[in-house]
Image (cartoon, rainbow over all chains, first blue to last red; front, side):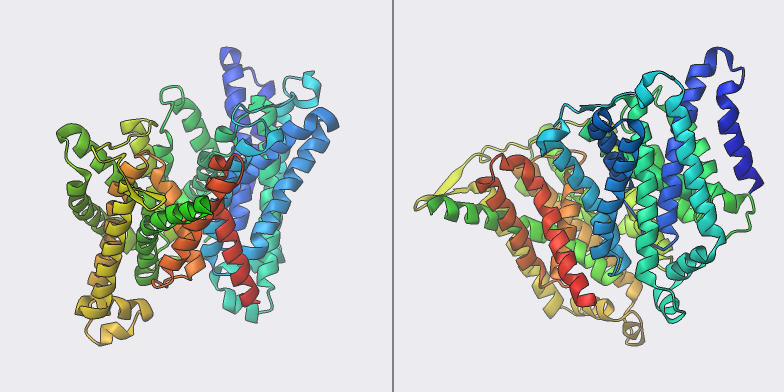
Length: 299
Length: 285
């Protein structure tokens, strides 16, 4: 808990620290860490019910496209919320058919969903096709730090949701659902409802993170916004940091996203090999992630 | 009418390769109980092997077929030994994450090694066509269909006639009882996973001529195979061919009759998967 608050405080103070020549780079890295840590937390929220979502990249992309399409007419904040809602509703639709079934159906359906959205973004006439979509800068572009603090807001929301779920009865229902659906059902947990609510909240947060990301990059194209890379990041970060916790995804986000930003200076394509490798090694040798290594008490 | 029948014919020919790939996926799911997100990557390996053999030594893809089958079998066996076996008793989430991670690694390694370009194997008979009354049959799709059908029939005979095939079906039905009867589940798993990979590898060689080899070619087939397997029912090998036929025909119809259909074809598998899931979840209520 103390570590979580410390990290959040660091993010809040980062723009005011005397960073010298490196300020722009550090703030950029800080922004991506915030957004992707929020995405990772939102993935973890779904994973706590035992469901593997491979569509978090798609929810992220939907949020970003929502902002790109709606912000010119509605302004920054309403577009952000509506984009996130779009992601949440699509997740509900997906969950309504897949979450009643065995877990692998949801994993498969979510992967297929993330692939089909790229096709839609390419073919739908208003989505800009292969060329892409410009995104207006946040809040009219008057304040250069606006995306950074919007990112901080999304991260705070993701952390708050995660802490709420971790500490309350909902977290217990999630853990019961994950460990054995049959037993959870006997204990009076409404399994499908718990899974659906977790997915809805998770996709909403992912959509918000995507919207803020769009306001930073100012341009979206289907290959970037709906790339599998985002879904991979969303799940490797919590697994590396420590599943089913709040600190794990935060810690994983700080380390992996900084590493990625540094690696990107040298490798353009194929840096995902690193993520894939970390994923496989963590599953085989470090199933509890960094937190397990540090002797964290959560199991 | 002729266009309609020609479209159906094209769909039918594609269904053979789809069934071949999806059978492998159903095999690893039904027998080993693993959701293999890296299944298509075995296909990609087969496709690149065919490309390399053709580009370096001019080896005919028909000859590469056997090599790719054996190579993919070996890679599948190694994958089972090194990666799948340690997580056989782990939570399903971990198993799926592991195969997904493997898929990400293999796709991006291919991207680093070969770049994102598509590579086509072009033997002299690549563009040959046969005429059948008013209809045209591409020689390559027709040959691929015959080869796939032959492989699937062989597999069918293996499952019904040989002791090993029967043992595999026994393990698929029940995890414990076959052990009491003296069947080594461990060996059966290894064989099933290797066989699944080998089927995908052989399909990859056919696709390197019909379509192309590229880092993401396998991934697309993983998704399509999942749609087919979901429609057929998990672990149901007999349902795979009809389900593959449904997907292939739907794709052929969309590409012929929907304006600008070329791009929409890539969305058809999702529709099939979604409808299969809707049907399943209605029954689960």
